Amino acid sequence: MAETRVIVVGNEKGGAGKSTIAVHLATALLYGGAKVALLDLDLRQCTSMRFFENRKAWVAGNDVTLPEPIPFRLSEDDVALAAAPEAEQVAKFEAAFLAAREAADFVLIDTPGGDTQISRMAHGLADLIVTPMNDSFVDFDMLGHVDPVTMELQKPSLYSLTVWEARKARALAGQRQPLDWVVLRNRLATTEARNRKRVEDRLTALSKRVGFRMGPGLRDRVIYRELFPFGLTIADLSPQVRPVPVSLQHLAARQELRALMHSLGLSAYSGETLLAAQ
Picture 1 (cartoon, one colour):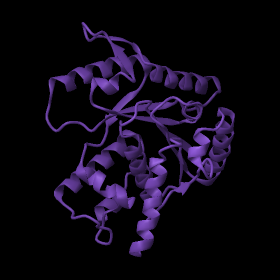
Picture 2 (tube, helix red, strand yellow):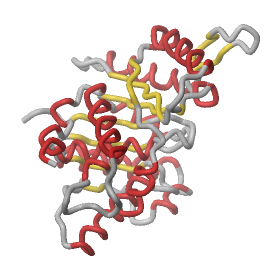
Picture 3 (tube, helix red, strand yellow):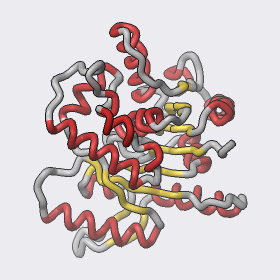
């Protein structure tokens, strides 16, 4: 039996699209035939967990069958746990993670937009870290700092150092496969801009310094927001599952999801058969 892989979707800045990426990765993996365990460490928001609760309700109300991940809540009351002592949060996370790893092919962990002990622990357990960022210097600042006069890269940020420490700890532990870190340029504007080129140049410089790859994210499409209340993603749409009118833009969104899976080295789970059949 293949070893369970751990995917962490992380970025200490809120609003970067972590949960959107997480739920799309989960559904693509599910359609690729994988068993997926889901942990949501944003204890106050639990956006990914709520998404799949919506999915379960929508499936029950529409008499259809869709693949679903195995949810592993850290506690029965995550909001209360968020206010609990750090040691209690750590114990709950460790128990949930061990159970998730035994139950699935992939453990997918959505992390909060901030620095917490359990988020740092999750990064240390990851085989693959996926960091979505909006294509701007506001989000770049979470990865690296630039000189305000010359715009040259000065140094990595605290989050980049967190991932660096996770990679170093993994190597010291004798893990055979190195930690793979992919930064996704998410919500790209549809038109080329001078600022985009500046961001790209600094990301390229930073990637060489701290060791991440760059990949394509998801554009800011209406369809992603439209499907969220139902707990559905673009991969779910079919003649039987069509809560919103389908257009050519949806085909482009599916291509984005396919490109995302390929860039993460998950081509075997990109949903090619499913998408082609629809």
